[in-house]
Amino acid sequence: MNSLRRTAAHTFMFMAALTLISKLLGFIREMIMANFYGTSYIVDAYVMATTIPSIIFGGIFGAVAIAYMPTYSKIHRKDGETGSNKFTSQVINIIVILSIIASLIGIFLSDQIVQIFASGFEGETAKLTSFFVKITFTYVVFTATGNILGSYLNYKGIFLKPIIAGYFQNLAVIVVIIISSFSTHYILALGMLIGAGLRLIYLFIISTKAGYKYTPSFSFNKTVRSIIGLAIPVFIGTYIDQINTFVDKTLASRLPEGSVAALNYGMILVGLFTGLTVTLLVTMIYPRITKASTNEDWADFNDVIEKGMNVIIIISVPISFGIIAFSDEVVQIVYERGAFDAFATGITAGAFFYYGIGLVFFSLNALFVKIFYSLHNTKVSIICAGLSVIINVSLDFLLIGPMAQDGLALATSIAASVNTLLLYYWIKYKYPQIRIMKSKRKMAKIVSSAAIAVGFAYLTNWLLTSNIWMPRMMYIGSSVIVAVLMYYVLLRIFKIDETKLIGQVFRKPDTK
Image (cartoon, rainbow, N blue to C red; front, side):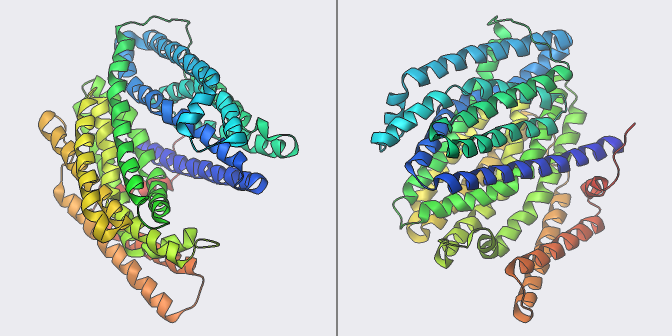
């Protein structure tokens, strides 16, 4: 068991490192694009053309990839490797057919699609966007299929290589951007197409090594139809979440200039914290609880969920407190340069502060939703998400007057907390065999430790800024180090078992 936990700890750290590299590659990609094309109409056309397929198809194909895993687990238990491989092939073949149809629609109706999604584009910008759309719709085939293979590999316990697969896309885009600067900008969109193709090839090779064997089966049987039944609620739930974002930005557009940007920048920072921690953790947990649910091994299910929830709390609570205490400093370090002045920092820090209040709930929602998915119950998340949207929109109108964009961020956090409570109690009463939180006292110890640690960090920052001059990044860096050390010591004093995972990260993994 210790060996398994040590391996999981190492895997998580490697996933975080590889994901960070992926985000850095994406940042470099944007820098290179800005270097060669600035803010020209070419970039407008390119960004819109790469966004449109995601808006139309990203949700449904992503939902199929999520719904695939519970069904695959059930078939794998019943029919073994042969049956589950056939099922995977059926899903891939149907997705390929549907995505080819979608691509043809995009190719032949690109002008009309641009008129709908980019009605403000005219002349050469509209023509170039239409040309790019013909290409970007084509790579839907590769991305949709790649998502299924990514889920397959995750189920097999392979997490690192799917992240590496994403490097191909960023690297291909970077190379094509550079080449286009010496030839013609019309080849820009080929970078996404080539990258998606390379990613798919790599995932297919890794999948075959993991045991997958492709079969040309196009049967639209009951099992495949069950995936659609699971995917549709997931798809609806995803777009319900988008409603919150859409309403927030629409209302923010009525506020003074910069309000929409402040919300966007604040949420990007929150997403960065969760993307490098909680999202990766939930990605690792989902296959494990799916297998346990299929085998009705509730002891293992509860063990994974309890430890997963504890680790999420251990990670997200101090980050949330840290955002509340240091929102201004973080925004200054990350954004304040060039046109991003002190005023921009002020309004962004406010949004970041109120989003930070909800970070714990955003994180727990990601876990709770996956619990329902593993149980083949996708309807509950829709109901809870729908109720949270009603609360969010109501609070938006109530808080936007006195708090402007800060009120919109606070409304989102409150709605997320309500969603968390709804999901938690639904699990508790609908599935009595599942125990999410075994010890409320442990949770209280974790929260208290986080509050004390961040309090010491705040005191450290005040003492340093009052008495010593050094670059502002060193102030916050020193404070973070104090918080991390204090937090770890307190968790060890309170005998929080999950802290052992931290020590296991620095031990050599077993090679037996």
